[in-house]
Image (cartoon, rainbow, N blue to C red):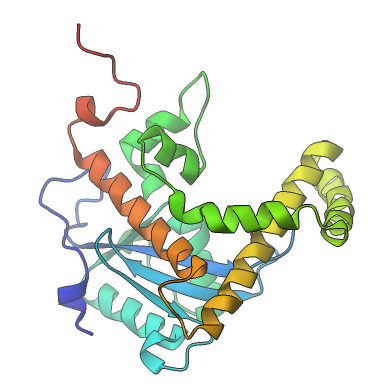
Length: 254
């Protein structure tokens, strides 16, 4: 694989808030194994690293038999990108991807070589909206009418898992600790724990199916992981357009 031919070269015009040195950019996503209640603290390992844009995505995974698709291959690719002055972009990339690449793959990526989509002007405006601030990626994408159909199989699997008595019992136990440590209500803590645990389990089960099928791109896990790369790249493209054309709440013409 040749890095220069694979990854997107950003055009000269930059989205509002885009770092001045971001003349070359690639979206990066990290998927972790986390079946616990805390999305940050309970992670056990990196399942996959995905890099690319809306036209092509390259997925590296923990159980790959081939070296070039392994997490070692992902580390080599990331180092090659940094050496070529590529910027690694993603929603909450500084708070999530950088943290777990450092923790599990011992990759210390300089923050100035990253672009967090939360720092772009169009996303900041949504975060600061007084009537209903928007912070989650899925809600930001909804504002810009970027579909998340690729997540539906995982979401449907998670909804089924939420009905399992053993998972409900685990969520109830976790909710007690969350309510005590974070000061949340018992019901909010319970729903938070159940959502995270069910989604994490759905992702893990889908990943295991993906591995059994030899890392096939025709699996729910591949489509889930690569789909977020596609969606985030489409978001950047939307943010590059003139503000009047991309504003999610633009007024109709008189």
